[in-house]
Image 1 (tube, protein in one colour):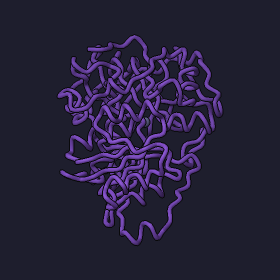
Image 2 (tube, helix red, strand yellow):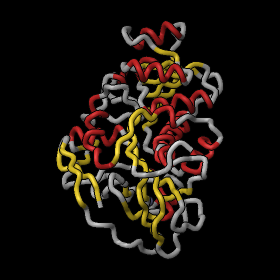
Image 3 (cartoon, helix red, strand yellow):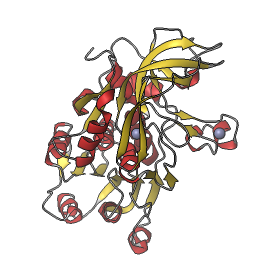
Length: 353
Ligand SMILES: [Zn+2]
Ligand SMILES: [Zn+2]
């Protein structure tokens, strides 16, 4: 089967990989039909590293995906306990927690110490034709959610978790640094949660105008973002400040944008694995910081949100490529040009239901 592996920084190769083994008990064989490129995949692509994890051996990237069940092992039941069978379309949670450790037993499966994650060494990801997945990671897609939006339930889950962490309340003001796919989803969820104003800092003009379409208030890209947010909030600052960009100088700006006693949530991942922040900024205002780590069991809720049209996923998809053109798709995404927001890799899935 065709698969694409990363051999080193910016070295993606389309290869003929061995077919996956038949699924064991509690597992399913999935044909991947739609997969999204994530900002974290771009970190791996650009630096052959994500955080402190090195991509040492050739690795299939990718963790945002949907597909069709082709074969089931014994006792294959979905994440919400429904029996799986061949032919069902599913979205797949890329995280496989151990379900035995202290964190798992108290419900915090996303911070499991023995967590495996699709597309993170040593586990190959979804940029290949087929893979074997735990059945419990699968969630059946209803007919009105196509495979592409099924793939985007993963970034939606990440956004839901970040918004849950900082508890956006009715009437809150929010500053959002970064209107990439995750930022644009956080924006929509913050508006749904009752945020009075969401100020959006984003250097790419097409992303800023997309943010405006979702109800965001653009911060002047030519101005100092903190000064502009202070001006717009009457020198008060915002209740909740979200970093959903590259976690570089934006971390300091996010902290400076928050009102005393405000909440700061960090979603973006820095390229150099360092966090830079003046201690006094955070201490004098007694800010609460939340480091957001992926998500936990958000798929059922994410499916309901999309089904009821409370979130627009389709509007974020700007480019589609077949699997065989994945290297070109990554190159385009890494250039941050040509109006790119979300790139989806398609493999004869359903579209536009
Ligand atoms: Zn992702
Ligand atoms: Zn665990």
